[in-house]
View 1 (cartoon, rainbow, N blue to C red):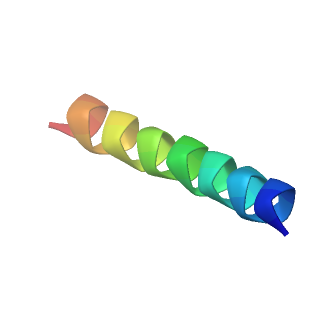
View 2: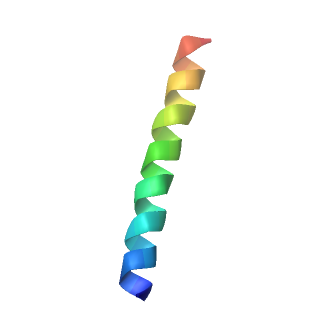
Length: 27
């Protein structure tokens, strides 16, 4: 279970970073 949660956190962190970069670049 811990590994699954860790992978999910990693995936959401990567997605969040992508969204942040898009917002920064669009402005």
